Length: 106
Image (cartoon, rainbow, N blue to C red; front, side):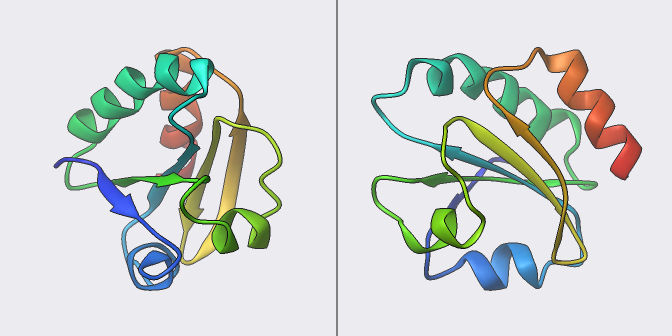
């Protein structure tokens, strides 16, 4: 499964109302660490296909959702389960650390 493009408009339906856990990557085009974590997030989307939805929301194009969840620095990865925040990771993290966090929630 590929990554979803999330927006202020589709966030509620795709993330908060999802029956499947969702990993959301809050990012921006100009953010160096965001570009570093992007391939890791893409790999997680493939490795957890069917068990986890993965979406990206550009904080420059969408301001409501990042404000709602208090995202103040990027990259921020938030794992949602049953429409609630289950875990938050700020900054670049290696793949194994992210997978460890995801495995605990799944």
